[in-house]
Amino acid sequence: MASAYDAIIIGGGHNGLVTACYLARAKWKVLLLERRPIVGGCAVTEETFPGYKVSTAAYVNSLFSPEIIRDLRLKDYGFELVERNPSSFSPFLDGRSLTLGPDRDSNLREIAKFSKKDAENYPKYEAMLERVATVIEPTLTMTPPNLLKPGIGGAWKMLQLARSFQKLGSGMGEAIEVLTGAARPILDRWFESEELKATLATDAIIGAFSAPSMPGTAYVLFHHVMGETNGKRGVWAYVKGGMGGLTQALAKAGKDLGVDIRTDADVGKILVEKGAAVGVALKNGTEFRASRVASNLDPHQTFEVMLDKQWLPADFREAIARIDYSSAALKINLALSEPPRFTACPGSGVGPQHHGTMHFVPDQDYIEHAYDDAKYGVPSKNPVIECTMPSSVDPTVAPAGKHVMSMFVQYAPYKLKEGHWDQVKETFADRCVDIVNQYAPNFKSSVIARQVLSPLDLERLLNLTGGNIFQGSMALNQLFISRPVVGHTDYRTPVKGLYLCGAAAHPGGGVMGIAGANAAREMLKR
Ligand SMILES: Cc1cc2nc3c(=O)[nH]c(=O)nc-3n(C[C@H](O)[C@H](O)[C@H](O)COP(=O)(O)OP(=O)(O)OC[C@H]3O[C@@H](n4cnc5c(N)ncnc54)[C@H](O)[C@@H]3O)c2cc1C
Image 1: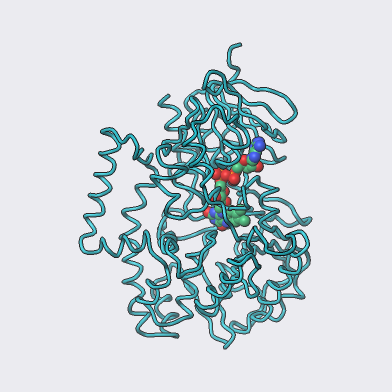
Image 2: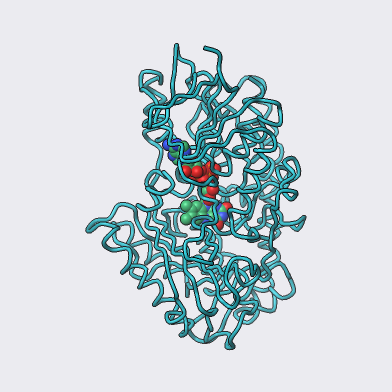
């Protein structure tokens, strides 16, 4: 039977949508199958509470590729970024606060409230991270070399990378530390104020089941100097109308390019004949055929759930089984009757303190203790919380005068030593609300409604193994030359015609779209 489609994409996360759009732009006939009633995966907007537009999972855009925005004309389809200025606000219980953002002079004034020396060092620290970012940023859009069979192309890529590191001169050692080391010793060396270090350290642990004292956490520090919003480097943004504004724009672009998008289409099996992918079967038995299949799902779902193991070599299966999905992230979505009134920043109504990410972490030890609980399978007694209130800059997401808030919480270990997440999650969420209430005494009474997504809920809702928000941890041993596994970094798999196109592949998690674009580029090479 002739294939009805040139390619089938399993999963309509933002990466799957990007792959579908690029293939359709190259005149391929593409079918995209999404399990949920809406496309978008982790990047969706849902009216969880009537009248409120909630970004169910991901809540802030950092690195979505400007090139993809241009290529797919996403602005024509309603995609709009709303800048966050300032980008971060950390209140403290002694009544002080630290506000950081794109205005460098204001940052220095704010940091000097805690330490003049830190204010002097901050621009140098940022410059150091920017230097590292200039080396790393070009690798994001690269197909990583296959270390097992580098060939001339792979050897050339490694040489190029070595050359760009060389350009760092004596800064190379520092760059290697940022790429491989722990955040805490780096922050301790640069700064003396715990308030500043705690604010910066929370960035280093986002989505990681690690404490800032653990190797691998420094890698995330430079993410805040990468990327751009509306041409401005390092500025993070909300998507107008919630994160679904991006994926709905991608879906509209895809439809105009001819992509056949089907929702409520739960794929159960990847069909393989003579070692080559030939299509997929839905759980309801419906089959679709194509000579190329790209999975937007994580390696566990793709290779261990959807494929017969006879099609995969034993060493590949072993490598896939070693992937770390450990996770300790929990999300709380809230509808609020009024913005938090911080003791450290009195006054009612919306102010700059609400525009960016609000951190509730007094010092680095607080994060270490929170991690200590979780490593033994206990939800942190004092969790690390960051909140965002996009309605402070985007009135379209909440009824007039009301607000939506995302609360991203760590550490909530997927594997509990005792109890079950369905039983403990509301009590844990109460604790999170209480903590924010210590900083803003009107907070608890302002909560109109809430949705608590435990790591188990994230797994159930989004098919994320272990609730891991990045489709596999972003530890160093699972990045670049080893994402998803060594020898298979070119989006291809041991099954001919089967590709990975999501966060499980390089450059990994986060709403960047780059994995999807890179995968499409490789698929089009045939
Ligand atoms: C709670 C949370 C908060 C986050 N916050 C941020 C943030 O603020 N900023 C940021 O940059 N990143 C954030 N991330 C990470 C980021 O959202 C993800 O790494 C990224 O969106 C993954 O995109 P993807 O397209 O690769 O995969 P996914 O979004 O995981 O998409 C996979 C798609 O496949 C579908 N699917 C699964 N199984 C099947 C099946 N059997 N059949 C058909 N379809 C199926 C899923 O429903 C989903 O739509 C967050 C993630 C989470 C979970």
